[in-house]
Image (cartoon, rainbow, N blue to C red; front, side, top):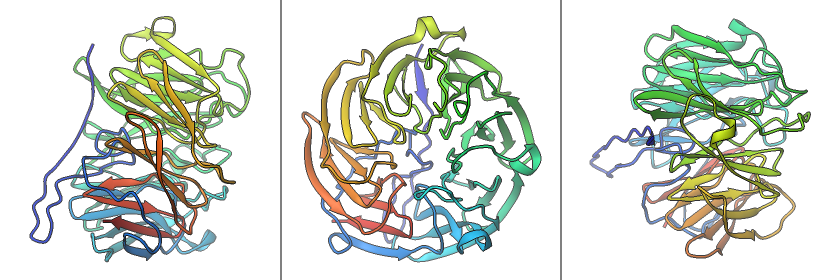
Length: 419
């Protein structure tokens, strides 16, 4: 059965520049972490190939998105408990177009976290932003608030031990959020236009302490004419009908010893009808054939690898290959259908870890370490480190490559690099 990730691409023609590409969610046009073709800089820093650098009014770890001639991101507006959940818009010259406050923020706990970890998603008409506070809001591209709700006030406080990380996704006429925490986990859908709740379904499974907690983002896919949500958490990969949230299939077996503390952070990556799933706190990665009905655990588990997984970074899956970046900086290329290892190499050693997810542009991967080192690595036909770029700020957001530019969001700034 052929599966295809839904892709939305709109072409803008502007007098000053032609913006023919969009980055409508945290992993890019196809939700894959794969950049459009472009002439991207390999070497850059605070002083080299930097077009602009602008300070942000508060902390945030969300990845920027792009639609046409505008860049959007979430961040705190102000610091600490007195700060606000915020959405900001910029043009390609780094000029702030608008900012909007959406209520009191709930600050982050982790050194790389914040109250603004989830990334915005857009359909080109509306922006949908979600925050640790529980606020979910729709805005137009000019910053007008269209509707706003709060999931925690409606359905109870979140019981995650760390900072909420899942981003909202668009599925048909709805915007969907996955809330997977210590108990009472659920998926909920709201109509994009009206903000009315369309459906809510439970996603609770009997797992040990912390294992039910998930910071992952669903993948929206079409299978056999049915739009589906692929959801990862609580030791299970599940597919849900986007119309009502009902379960289509379930793949389990990711925690055979029923261990505690196996929460998941990195999301799956999908290509060639296969989901690449990182789990086990960075010790495992598996390939799962997508499709089917009911319990597909015995029939759809294709392969499993030990010792080369990732805890925080989401892998890349593209053109028959999966690229997995471990938190400590080991980059591994795998055959997506067999799990066969093409190569496994270490990035230059440093004290920090990788919380940011990598981005693939042509034959190069851009990977950012938490303390500000951004590596550009050739991955085809062989591994080769092309550059180690130093940015003097902490990084948890994924690099965005589009329109021949590299956008990099740090804890306190937004950078634009280009040749």
